[in-house]
Structure formats: C-alpha cells, structure tokens
Length: 73
Image 1 (cartoon, rainbow, N blue to C red):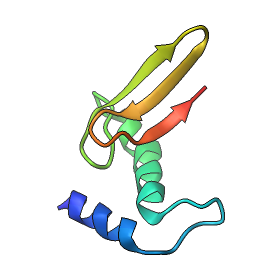
Image 2 (image 1 turned 60 degrees about the vertical axis):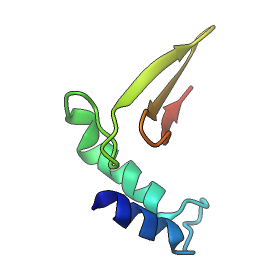
Image 3 (image 1 turned 90 degrees about the vertical axis):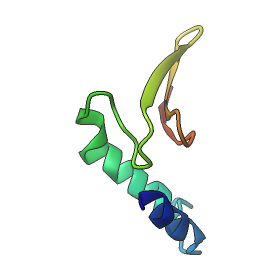
C-alpha cells in the first residue's frame, strides 16, 4: 500500500524550492522521525537502511530496497 502511495506522490509535478519531489520529502521525514530509531533502520518503502564506508574517509547511508540516498560524506 505504501509503495502505491509513493508512486502517486512521485507522479505529482510539484517540486520544493530545492527540486525535491513529494515522495523524497516523505521518505526524509519518515527516516528522520521514525525510521532511524527502528532496529534495523528502515526506509518508508520498508527496505533496510545501511551505512557503508567508502575509502579513504567517506560514508554513504542509503536504502537497500529502493536505492534512496539518505546521507553521504
């Protein structure tokens, strides 16, 4: 059900002032408020969120299921 809702939000042509669509905004809000506190961490789509280190000193936090990039350095 949530995947259908995300697809509908993706189809809406509205963009924020930073160019983000509504489904991306919903995923960010969900992860910030709820998903980061679950064990294991979860994305709005239901996929697991993982943090991987990238040599030499970087890291990436993204969803394994949908590929949504949450944070990077």
